Amino acid sequence: DIAQPFQSKIVVDNADVYLKNNGWIIQAIKAMSIDVTEKPSITYKREINYLKEKGFEIQEVVHLEPYDKAHAFVVAQKKWEIVDND
Image (cartoon, one colour):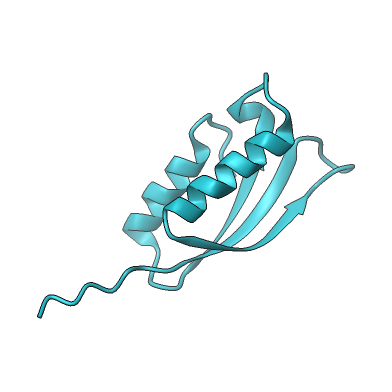
């Protein structure tokens, strides 16, 4: 739960250091903390695509409206590439 414009990058950077192979993240995307000029749906898509590009398989996206506007939870699993050094 990070209220920063680059919150997905922070999640990915931390996952690279601390998360085990096939580990899970639950990220709260706070759309207004990322870009107040953009529709939340566009921000969600961009952040989810970033996670996918970094090797996460998105398992579920939960939008929190009407309880909390412009917030969504993303549940994802990191799939590490196995490098064969032979």
